[in-house]
Image (cartoon, rainbow, N blue to C red):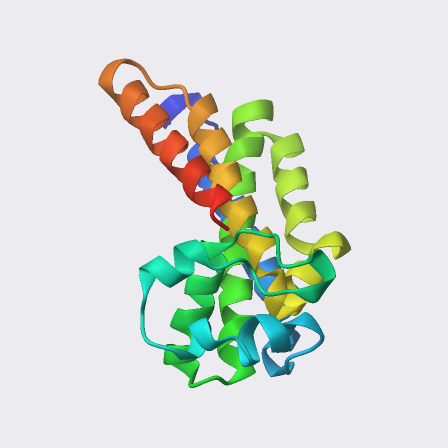
Length: 193
């Protein structure tokens, strides 16, 4: 038996892969119903009525314009989030399902990145698996996933967790330097969300 496993047991890599597949499936099961949601509250100001989302691609505007939301006094800086809205507008023609699908995909990526981080902290065992599966369906994520304007949270979580997982990666030499550089880049990009 490879790696000292017993007949019928699962290797750690295979067990980790199964947990991640199960977590992704749970994300889809928990939030697939959001795909039929419309726009609500701040979605109108940030997406539906936002001229940047509906205009031509202008990266300068994305980088210079504050995030449009009266509740936060238009002081928030989220150019990556607005850029993803711009992309969704092109993909779905302004239909809410495209925005909700993207939120679901980002939440799934955040869950997978959280799983990698949990495995880095707790090892590839039951604690990391349980934490990952719980993260996938925890009700605290409902607003961020179900509300199109909650996109900033799921993007920054996905990229932030991935950056932290890379910081904990057990690699040596050049691979460690590359993992550190990639982690720093992901963290920087997360700040733009």
